[in-house]
Image (cartoon, rainbow, N blue to C red):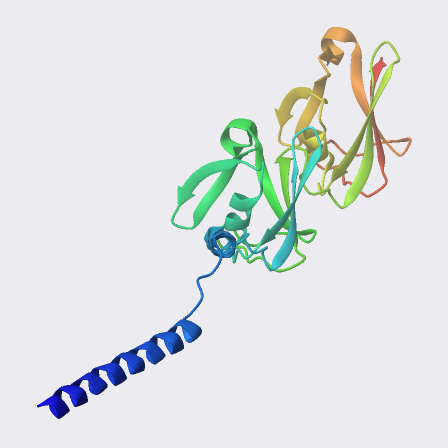
Length: 265
C-alpha cells in the first residue's frame, strides 16, 4: 500500500515539473506586444493610403490640339485653344470654354445662327456665320465636320452684300452734274453691257424712258436733264470719246471709264 502511495506522489511531482518546464518555455517564446506608438503610426499610414486611393485622378488631356477662332461683325477675333478627343466640330465647340452658340436643328444637323451672343440670320440680317477649316471654306456642318490634330477652325460673321465675289472686269463710272461736280464709282462687274453695270453700282440711281432701242436716260442721281423741258441732256462718253451706243447696248470692257455728263444744248 505504501509503495502505491509513494509511486503516485512521484508521478504527481513529475507532472508538476513538466508543467513548470512548459510554462517557462512558453514565457520565453510568446509574442511580445507592439508599443502603442507603433500601432498609432501604422493606423495613420493606413488612413493616408486610404485617402490617396479615394482622390479622383485628374482628367486626361485630349489627344487633339485645335484652334477655334470667332470673328464678329466688328472684325475682332477671339481665339480658343482646345485639347479634345472630339470626332466632330460640334463636340469640340461644346468643350471650348467661353464659346457659346445656338441655331436651328434639322435632319442635317444645326444651322448656326448665334455665336457669342451675336446673331447672323440671313433672312433677317442679310448675313450668316461662315465656317473655315485651315483657311479653306468648310464643306460640312458642325455636326459632320471631322476634327484632326492641329486643325484651325474659323467661324466668321459674313455679310451677303459685303462678301459677294468680285467681277472679272474693273471699270470706272463718273457722273458730272449741272454744277460741274463729278462723283466717281469704282465697279467690279461681270456685266456685258453698261446698263447692268450701272445697276450694280452702289449709290448710283437713274431713270428714263424705255423704247425699242433701250432706255433714254433722263434722270441721274435725282437730277433731271430732258431736252424738251430743260434744254439739256445726259451725254455718255467711253474712255473720253463720245459714246455711240445707248446704255443697253454699250459693251463693258475691263479698265474702261464711262462718263455720264449733264450737258446743256
